[in-house]
Image (tube, rainbow, N blue to C red; front, side, top):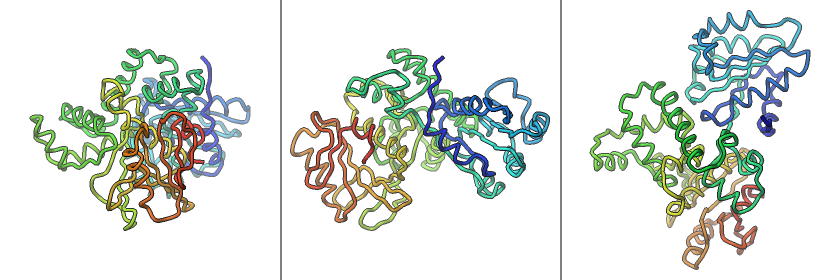
Length: 402
């Protein structure tokens, strides 16, 4: 099988090796965390001065490692003196009180610890307290557009972009292929695995039919403001009576599993965050499309928003939804350096009404930060419209906002 390196992630890991820092690879299941560990295993085992201890909690042979004491015993039995030991643990959240072992191992000489987890709760205050903040979280996401082209041996053209918009970035599709029925079956299998292992079992959920209806609702309403009260009213109209507090809990579980990403609203003029009516985007838009069903014709703008959101976060931005008195900005993007950018997403800028809506809201922002409209309008690559940059989606996915 061809080995394809996700070099950006490997470079991020390499920066923190040898610094007594626990490296934590997080993200939704089946997006490549285990693959990253195997690549690190192969790269590091090529040197005779290194020794690798790999524990994969998704394999039955490691079922006996149930808690931190079992983990301590296994690691102690397999450490090799005189070599640099790399301890790689996949799905570490399945080991009870794993953080007690991790804290101890971090301080040992000639040891690096790299762990993966599919639930954000694993990085709770307990873990942060026990290891004193000495960890680096690296979020492993779905394939970027460029990675998608590499994994599937595709050229950078409109047909490939349409495939990316339709099927998303599950790395496993490189093996399964982009045949419609097979790809959708695979995406549904991944979705149900995440739902069962990281939502239902972890949170002991009993009302599974409601959970599935909630996910369907979230897929249908990607990019729309969501409130628990509105969901409760909708569910009641469908014959299900669910309290808003329960709905909020279920949504938080979906976010903890990394299936969903919560994006709060930002009041651009008042410079404050709202606490209600957040938006939500799926970690992988291909899974979202599989859940929503049908073709993309009727909801293409929702999918494009999801695609753009994913890539903005991949580019290192913290993303919020912008709120103006007279309208909304799709994304307010900031970096720790203080950089800011405003982004609107549209399918096609085909008439003056659409142009006024997308460009007019940006012109209403009275500051000098860069402003962008991203669309799939034909003949557009990177145009300057009186200070607002109009980017084609393909241009953005290849070059970012630069």
